[in-house]
Image (tube, rainbow, N blue to C red; front, side, top):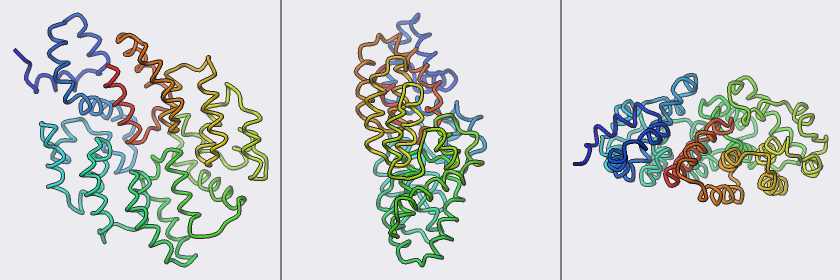
Length: 354
């Protein structure tokens, strides 16, 4: 006899997925039955549990991020997702409207509904009720190239004064508070794109942006706190000299096992490819940095070589140790700054490993 979906759902909703799987080790028949279901709906359950765990910690975040606060049941009610996961995308497509497109875009991105993401992007481009500044922030948050291109065309037709007002409005959009380092850099690239600037102006624009976010992101984790620093504080923290052209070599010169994660975050934020390439190699090389930390950092800063190294090591682990490993990974502060895409990819790896 096979357990019905409803019972399996209740098990997963009310227990941490790691503890649940570990506890099932003493019930082999029950474990076998549930593992059959997990192969189909595991991603949904894993992400739902993860979203539920964040409920208290993310209570003050903005509307776009609040989808993570919902329990699985609340999420189904909010976006009318039926219990059958396979029908969810079609159901959301049929319910998509200008009034709910922002919320559904967040859900579609979290659960990697490609067809729904494309339809949301088209809806956002055509929307006349949603401001262009909101659209730009969303395009970077959810990696929507068509929407970003639409926004850039609108920006290029603005005067310099209009651009200043526009980007000030964009800075106030709540979704920008959850940007990771790469999204922050992409957003700043758009600010700089319409005009010709010197490297010193680039440095000033980016550091000023970090300074503006200081109060709004003070509750974020240690990995995200690089955004909290003023330009002067950043120079002191990673030994950056005044001339922008000298920043990269200076960071490389002081790179050590103690500061490699901080410098990696800075290098990614300010797009120093030479620096974060060396940081990636050093992260692989440094033996005192836990493998779980390395894995989380590889997702947070999109370091494919480091990620491949971690996955190779992960494949050598026993199933019991995999559970312990991922539980440790969740405790690293960089994990709290994952965006939707990083969270989904990380959960996909967890599902595969288990």
